[in-house]
Length: 322
Length: 265
View 1 (cartoon, each protein chain N blue to C red):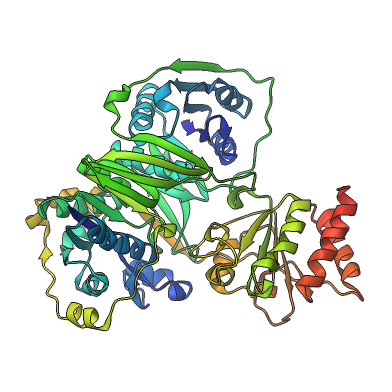
View 2 (cartoon, rainbow over the protein chains, first blue to last red; view 1 turned 180 degrees about the vertical axis):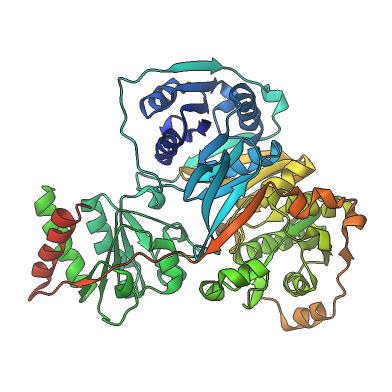
C-alpha cells in the first residue's frame, strides 16, 4: 500500500496535524510519500522525512507561496499521477479540508472529510467520521483509487522526529504559470499572535456562563499561560459576547480532543459535550453539584471557580517552576 | 448582478442529539427542520450584495417537497426567488453528485455572478459541496470568507479567515463563495415578508429538466457510501470529587492527580 500525505504549512510554519497525519500514514502503508508545496520550503520537506516520509515531492516556486486551489490542485494531481497511491491523506486543518475537497472533486475521487480514523479493508479505504455535529459516527467506504481522506487533528499520535532518517526529496517547479492562475492573494494581516490553537492544544482551559463576564476569562487565561493551554468557551459565553467565536467548543463550534480539558463554570449541555467528550481527561469546576458536566468528568471540584482557578494557577506555578 | 444562494434544509441544532441512526439513515429525522444555520449567513450575504451592488438574489436547494419550507425562509429574509431541484434519482447522491445537481440548477437558471454557500451543514458536516459546485461550474472558489470587500470590473475581492490571519484575495467572476459565521448577522424576516413567502409557488426542476442522466447521480454514481451509522460510545468515566478545607488544598489534590496519576500536565 502507498499513501501520499499533504503537509500543511504557511511560509514554513507547519500545522502540527500534518505530522500526526504522516504518522497515521506510516502505520497504514509500506510507502509513504509527503507532498509539500511552497516557496523555499526545503526545511519543511526535510522535516517530513524526519517525521516518517520515505520520500518527498516538493513543488517549490513563487506560485506556491500562498495556498491557492488552482496551482495546488495541479501539483497534487501531478503527484498522484507519479505515485499512483491507494490513498491521499490530508490533515483536516482549515486549509487541509478545503484543499482535499477541491482536489477530490477535481480529480473525481471519493472523499471522507474530517475522519477520526482511516484503515484499509480488503484493499478498500474505510474511514470513520463524526456527523450530525459530533452526535453520530459514520463508517464510510470509498470506492475510488486513490481515496481521499482528511484526518482530524489529534486523532493520531504525534510521531517523534528522527533527524537521522534520510529520504529522497524530488524537487519540482510550477505547473501553471502565474498568468494561468486567476486567484490572486493581495494582502495578509496576521491575527494569530502566539495563541495556541484549540484544535492542536494538549490542554484546554474553558469557560462558560459561570465566568460571568469578559473579565471573568482573565483568571482562566492566567492558568492557561502557566499550563501552556489554549482557551475554550461554551456557546453561552460566546453568545453573551464575552469572548470571540473562534474559542467556541461544541456542536456549532470546534471539536477538540486534548489530553486535559478543564471546564470552568460550564454546565455541560449535550451540545457542548459533542465538542469535547473525546478529551482524555476532563476536569469540571462548578458551583452546582447537579451540573451535567460532572457526569462526563474524571475529576470534579464543586466550588467557586474564582477561588479554585487562581489557587490552581499558583500551585501549578510552584510545581512547574514558573 | 445575480447572486444564487445554495442552501440545505437541516435539523434544528437543539434537536441533533436526540436523532437516532435509524432515523438519520431513513432520511426522516423526526426533528424540526430549519435552514442549515451556516447557510443563513450565505442568505444574508446574498441579500446584502443585492443591497450593495444591485441585482437579483435567488435561493436554490436540492430536496423533496418539505424543502420548500427552507426556501420560503430564504424568501422571507429577502431573496427574490427560489428554485427547488428534485427527482427520485437524486436520492443517496454523494457530495459530488449533489454539487453537480446544484451546478446544473445554476446553469439552468441562467448562471450567477456570485454563488454563495455556508461553511458546512450541521448534519453531513462535510463542508465540500461549495468546492464541488466550483469544480463542476469550472469557476473560481473562495472559502472561509469573512468579508466581501468589493465587486468591481468583473472581479470579486474578499477577506478569508485563516488560522494565521486574514488574507485578502481577488478572483474573476463568476465565483463560488463559501462564507463563515463572522461575515454578518443574519436578519429576522418581517411579518409581512413571512406572509408573502408563505404563499410563494416554488418551481421544481427534475433531472430531465436539468439534463442530468440517472447514472450521474444517486447511489449508482456515489464515490462514497455510508456503511454504518452509530451513536458514539461515551467514554466510561467515574468522577472523583475533590474535597478539601480550602481552595488551595483542593488545587493541590487536583494537581496531584493530573501530574502524578494521569500525567497530563
